[in-house]
Amino acid sequence: MTDRRHPDRDTTEIDALVAHRYLDGLLAAADRAVGDGHAESLLEPDVREAARVLRSALVRVHPSFRFEDRLASRLAELAAAQAGRARLAAGGGTVVPFPLRTVDPAMDAILRGDLDPSALPADLDGDRPSPDRRPLIVTGAITSAAISLAGVAWVAWRASRPGAGRSPMGRAARTAHARRAATTGIAGPA
Amino acid sequence: MARPVFGRRDGPASSVVPLDRDRPLVEAARRDPAQFDALYRKYLAQVYAFALYELADHHAAEDATERTFLRALAALPRFHEQALPEDGPEASTFRVWLFRIARNTIANERRTRRRRPAASLETALGAGLAIADGRDLEADAVTRDEAATALRTVQSLPDDRRRALLLRFVDEMSTAEIAGVLGRSEGAVRVLIHRALRDVARRLEPPAR
Image 1 (cartoon, rainbow over the protein chains, first blue to last red):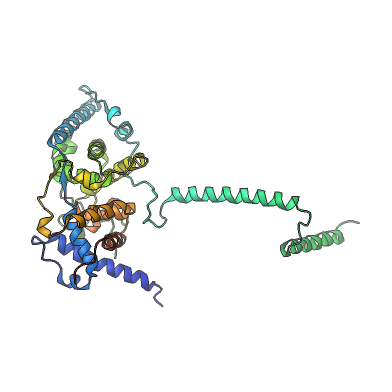
Image 2 (image 1 turned 90 degrees about the horizontal axis):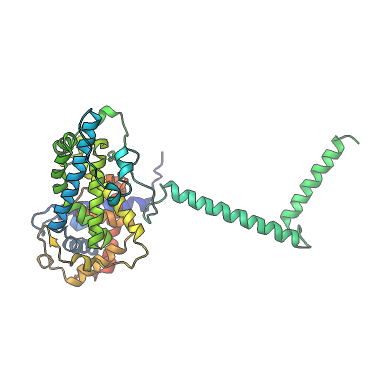
């Protein structure tokens, strides 16, 4: 059995794996000068430099403590509302109201279980080949609409032309139609 | 062989071994929603940083972070832990699940903000925010120009390429975790990151040889 894999794709995957190993070393190293020596020697110098710059430029940031505390309070309110709901479902207690809609219009659906906020939606990423259905459907609909419009325009144009049907395709169609008519005429009643 | 990523059920359910390092915290939060606070404090900086790099706006990042955690708490009863032994002792499917919520929330925010002029990441990062891990540019001898060029390039990358790069560098996720967040294979994530690095490399000055 022959290997049908594309050599370019293999090279891309190998390069990506080398970069991955280099990054593993770079990001894990306590001393930033230390990395995966083998991967380092295989990786293109400009990519290595880019990784080094990104490691320094992409720092993790922390929100303000005021925001942290405000969100913690909101979460505590929601937690109290959920606990109240659970007690109510168990047969006692009161529901603590929480103005969720003002925060997030999707919250009601999430609480009811009608919406999964972690579900990956289809999107139009440039890097994604074509695993999504929505873009395909949209593209298909646009294509079919374009074909239909082009078809209507072509038929109208051909009908309006006096010399219509002189193309090779037209001749072939007319010949086939004439043969079918002749066959039908012979086989049919006189 | 590619490992199953989060959210996929490739084999029988019995082959899924619970191995989430956050399991005790998740179970506590399920018993008592008030205990979700521990998970919130643990992942706040990570989610916020991802949102800030994605949105390049301090206020928008706060909004997206708020929605992410509120949605996570609301949906926690339906969270299913899925990790495999080969995912290692550091595996956390809760983190992957949380970042999938963040990814969706942020993507939605980016769509609604598309008509507004894009803010600069440099400006957003310099808006009086505390750097959590104490790294500085001087320690790596990276110039401000290089860092600025890198940030501008990151901002202009295609969506999944940019997300993969940010999750790898800012949140220091493994490729398996990133694959789970983005719904891609690990191989695809490695290729995304490599392409992103090459994009950045093209925009930087050639290294001194």
